[in-house]
Image 1: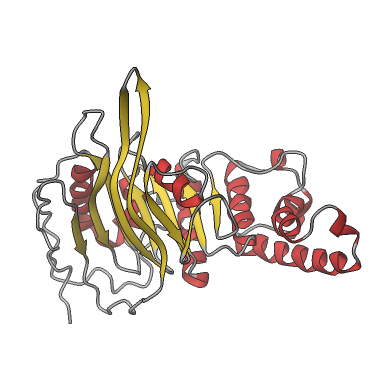
Image 2: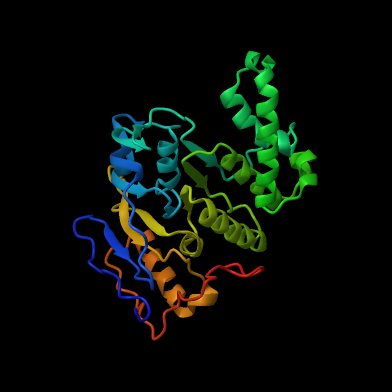
Length: 330
């Protein structure tokens, strides 16, 4: 039996190389072979003026396996959202390649769904119409909706939309409401359900909870983790909140700039796997706080940060519920 967390593989980065760590748990995670997202030596630069150039991302290489919950963490401006847009296909890298489900990403397509920071619902459509719009428009064009088969398909989609609403903790009566009639937390629940309706292989979330109050944010963190545990999509979640990253992710990737010079972009400073059962201040106490402090040093660009003391007398991950209770923020 593993007693507590093993000390992480604390090899400091050398010459900008990233540090890779893992946290041992009571039960080893099942082996995975399928790669959901392959990022191969990706860099992003843009001109800043007369012969000037600023590099945002520099030589990023990552493999994200199917079913992982990956959190991209780093300070504002480090390129987290840029990398997310590259995976989505909304932007193109200056150099390098990105593949999703084995195919090169060249544009936005159905392989990935996206939940932005700001609510993405159409204000003039009901909740049900917002949820049904994606599947209906992706399968039937305007004239195709005159076909008899569309009616049956539409009925199936709307039944699935009601199931997704229930899964996200909303009532069937909410389906007829318009976005302005919902609270911010309810709107974001609908936005997540909207993304899940597309049945995409990858779910991308960009600061999706940052605009919410602490209690609502905590509840949605637990809800998202529950949905992920039940359905196991591949999730890439962007945040600048270290505690949120440790609560949500099975893997945390820190992006940080090696230098403030324009020609130096962000690289992977830390790539750390976490227990699949999750972490929280309530269950892990001082270990959680120590790990938050340690990860934040990498986020700030301190790549020679001392090791956090993560050994303990008892295994903190035996508890089946490692998430904040209702009302507990982090």
